[in-house]
Length: 70
Image (cartoon, rainbow, N blue to C red; front, top):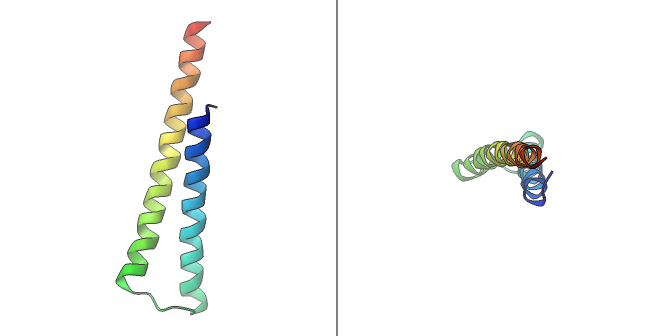
């Protein structure tokens, strides 16, 4: 796995953790859901999925390039 795909994986996980924390804030009742807070959680989950997909794509690409060189 290349450094870029590792970085994207960790960034995707971080986005998912932050979004889950936002959901937890709603569940325990610390803050009421507002349009901005809900959209932040949604965007974080979307970003997480996109980053993890991109990391997987880059990892496959680098693996196929390494295989072609051999």
